[in-house]
Length: 271
Image (cartoon, rainbow, N blue to C red; front, side, top):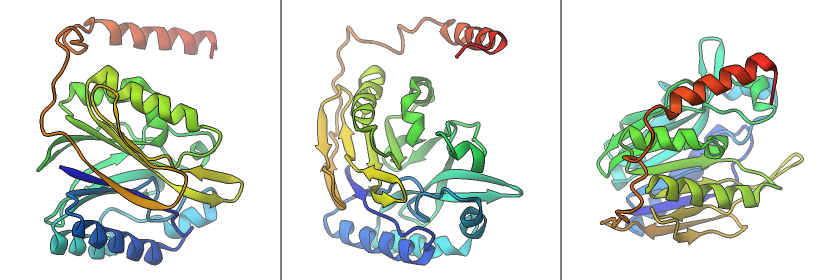
């Protein structure tokens, strides 16, 4: 399986321009025989920080605006994961969808952990999604989710064989991203790929550094600080260290204790 990381700078609020750019990337990467192209968080809209803009550009997953992307996936036989601001009734979500080579949305994930001021604009999702794709079971995450080890662990326990993460990660969190992606891969014995935005949006500087790590936390691809698309072949076979059987050796009551400890923390007002 060949995967492409589309580290690009969306035009804030210009959905049509971003969709045209996304389709151009899909077409170009198909010429390199990429099977799946991963895009950053809010790749269709740019990183939204204002309620007025969110209200204007948020879309439903049934929107006709996705049709050009779906048609491109069919015509060029590629799968893609991309992200957009979703509206559902009176609520907004940061959402990622998986569109397959048949032009079908076969998976949708709403970001469960909202960073800083995102909490003022968006609702958080509640479900952790594993997509049954033609390449196997693929877990979806978005940006800040990466910093919570429980998310990747749940995806692994639900059968994920690869985790794809759309991000809009900004300075000064470069080191956080590098450490967390390697950690999530190693502790779950699973490849992890991340596509980050690049560029400046107001006071925010998105630094890129999109990457792919294998199940042993070996870096297979590290993108620099520029707008670009790069690709890598993922290994067909995975050889795991039998001494590091993290999933089967996991203590069965650890999550019950985690819930209990979190409840006590909330009651006592501790952070």
